[in-house]
Amino acid sequence: MGKVTRRALIAGGGAIGIGAIGAGGLAGRNWLRNREPEAFAAQDAQGHLLWSNWSGSAHSYPEKRAAPASEDELLSILTKAPAPVRPVGSGHSFTALVPTDGTLLTLDGMAGLVGHDAATHQATVRGGTRLADLGPALAAIGQEMINLPDINKQSIAGAIGTGTHGTGRGIQAVHGSVIAMRIATPTGEIIDCDRTNRPEVFDAARVGLGAFGVVTQVTLQNQPLTRVRKRVEVRPTEDIFDEWPALRQKHRNVEFYVLPFTGHSVTITHDVTDKPVKPRGPDGDVETLMGLKQLRDWFEFAPALRRKLAAEELAKIPPEEVVDEGWKLLSNERPVRFNETEYHLPIEAQIPALREILAAIEEHRSDVFFPIEVRVIAPDDAWLSPFYERESGSIAVHAYYREDHDFFFSIVEPIFRRHGGRPHWGKLHRLKARDLAQLYPRWKEAREVRAALDPEGRMLNDYLKAVFLDG
Image (cartoon, one colour):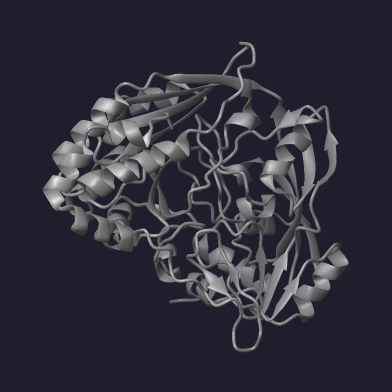
């Protein structure tokens, strides 16, 4: 997003805020909601150590922790270790995919590049490889991934397993670039699969939530290193809503962030260029985000003034452009923690649903200050992909990790569901098997494959039982 300082956003307004609300009441309310969430105990009564995900929305105390360095070690864990056996990458999923009182399994010891084909721009990588490490490793052999998500801390196995995606014209989610996969199952089997060899496993487990087995390596269809121009621009939200169909067609990668209570949004585009490199500078997103938070803190109960001050300052921000190899620009650092819900809707429903969501938030939740992220993803054929056989428009709603996110379910999720949305597997939602079965045409077949690969349910924690077995 464009850089705007906290000082600029509230310049001249502090006295108004204090006078309108009262210094004591304002300070007290902000102190309450700026408190750190209550910390989980470092260990449970049995001495098992705490595991928590990035945002703090999920945690557990696994009996055993395992970090295999080979497939033989991995198979021994999958077949013999205390269940549920749950793989973990970076812990960046907000849903409770990982928590277990059985065995927590990391593939950090099974990471790195296995091999590549320079002629076809294909590369085989181990499942534990983090996307942030994969970028420079592929660049060293003249390749880059076709697309990247907004954050690159995930492992490749975790990214494809949850349907992680970026944005772009005709560009699929990360798992859309997988042309072959190797998976270890709780029955002690190693399965190599692709479109012709065990295609039912390939189609069902490509987006598998870590419930079909453990992905030990994947072969990716990549592309040659490409230089792109990244442009960031602040514009009136209504203008972007109106132009969104054209913007999606004009740019290779395009997304925008709606800034609630400001009337403005931030567009981010990436397009192939032969311009000289102009590296990205220091990140300004944190300062912008905290500026929006400070504006909320002072003017939550004066929405017209909040909008006026924000609009005046945001309109002053000039467009920013940088040029570099795509893998260096598509992903960003996100040090400010948050919780998130995201749904993927039929592309024609994206803007209508977004209008409803923005109106509902601005009417009922004046405490919201985090931007709403809007992206587009091409269809694919993985059975449990949220983008299965339809072009999708995604909408991601965020909340500061210190503040409640109940509005995800009371206000936002009903709108998503009314418009036919499918939830992101790594983002917060409340759908169960009976709901999901209505959204995925191949749901029954996927469940049958999963049951065959894990007949004893060794990889199902309570959350995944509700996803696959409920109803």
